[in-house]
Length: 218
Image (cartoon, rainbow, N blue to C red; front, side, top):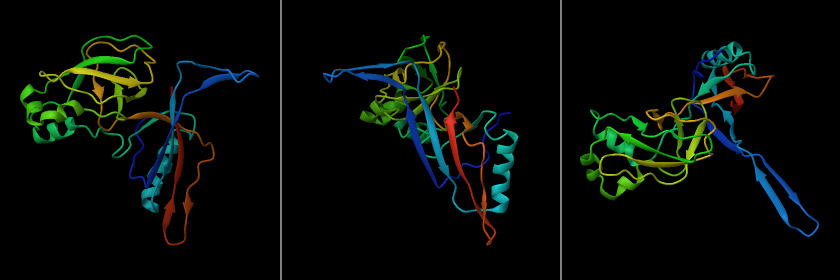
């Protein structure tokens, strides 16, 4: 099964990043640490008080995923979209495409890639020095050819033609081809429900509460 969780009006979201690291410490205190190409997100999501009518579609959706069996997508309000000035530029110029595409291929293990946009140089001139903050360090991004989500590690500067380079973490899990779209707003996370015993709490005043534990699916 698949699809997108039908209600993302969360009360809170706790995001945990897991980067497995093997470490050994000798008697003398010398440490050795090694990381494999592995990284994933976990999400602890709490809904506000819901009406029963609001709770039912959420639980029905999870039922269709057989709770923890199948993957599905979620989006995160606010934090799932960039705070960079590219958003202000596109809002002020609705006729201009927001699409950002890669201009080169990148292999597994790469941590940066070049991009271009349809945004003319005049738009970036209008925001002056803020053109160095088109996307911000800490923003989530993904590439259209795969489902893994990455994080921008440095503010993204745009050159005079609206292109540039984006650095990200972790290193690529899968190759990226030239011409793939870089998604930076409403970034979808492919996840599964960690809980096999998903609960919904119905209270006597007609309300319900739901909490979810989700993990990025690799």
